[in-house]
Every structure is written in structure tokens, then in C-alpha cells.
Length: 211
Image 1 (cartoon, rainbow, N blue to C red):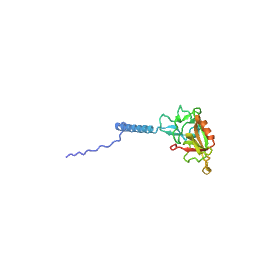
Image 2 (spheres, one colour; image 1 turned 45 degrees about the vertical axis):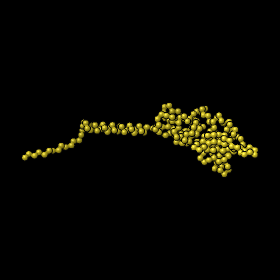
Image 3 (spheres, rainbow, N blue to C red; image 1 turned 30 degrees about the horizontal axis):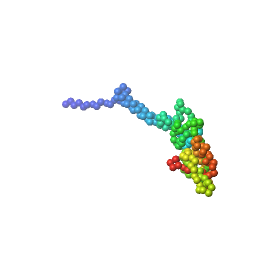
Image 4 (tube, one colour; image 1 turned 60 degrees about the vertical axis):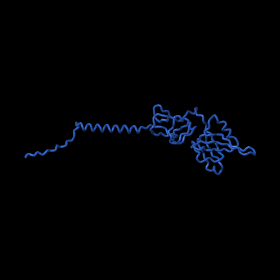
């Protein structure tokens, strides 16, 4: 009886011309290109200016006031740090509060001639609250005693932005003496200065929710 045993063929390494190998390599290449494109799109950042510390109205920008951060934002309201049409912001005046670490909006800057506010030093009679700092909103009050009548308090500045605070460590024992720099609109500057010049006690009061 003639029994024939089938012989298994040997597996051969595919050659470079094998279509299965070429298709496999093509699929790998497509996958690599696709993943690279997705990663590149997700990591597309552009350099923009960020406030190094809190910026307040009236500040004239210097190089140390801003840092550059690479962020994912498109063309919009923020100040770019690079580009063909970018103009360096040094010498521009801040027109509103920009918190530390915040992207700087282009609309928050103006030329010195276009800025309406003026920083005024207010020496207080009573201590200033500890949470009043650069960027806070405050009211300024003057209290006067007229003759034998009771003291009368007048609001001379409302919702003013604090540009800076100089604290006197001994002020709480001496009953005040701290200096708060507030930004006053030019139209009301004369009246504000006249009120401060009157003989009376000056108080700077922070507003709730005003940083």
C-alpha cells in the first residue's frame, strides 16, 4: 500500500517585492504621520506677554514688568511677543488692572497722551487694612471736626485703583502714617487734591470684592 505523507512547505522570509510587506510598511508610515500631525496640532503654542507682577493703571511698562510665555491661543486680544507686526510695549501705559500671571490684553495699554488717570499719594491718618494692596479698589474719606459740632466724614474718592502701598511697620502703634498711591481721573484731580489739603483725618477703605 502506497501511503504518501504530505510534506509541509518551509516558511519563506518575505522579500522586498512582497506586496504584503509593502502594504504593512505603508500603513506604519501613515500611522506615524497621523500621530505626529495630531501631536503637533495639540502642541501649537505661540509666545505672548504675561504680567510678571500685578500691573495697575498709570504704570509705564518696562522690560522687567512682563515675561514671555508660550500658550495655546489664536489670534485675538492678547499681546503677542513675536511676529512681523509686533510692536514692543515698552513705554506704553497700563489702563486697567492686569493680575500677576495674566495674559496682557492689547486693549489694556495706551500711549501716555491717551491715559486719563494720575497717581496720587494719599497719606492716611488711620491704618490701612492688610488686604489692601496693588490692584485693590478703595474709597478715600476725609473726616473733619467743625467747631463744637460732631465730626463729619466726606467721601472724596470712590472706587479708585491702588497703584502701590507703602506700609509703615510702626503705623499701627502711631495711628496711621501709611501711604497709598491711588489713580485719580484727571477730570476729578483738582477736587480730590483740595479735599486732601483740608484739615482732617484721611482714611483709605478697601472695597469688598475689589481684590
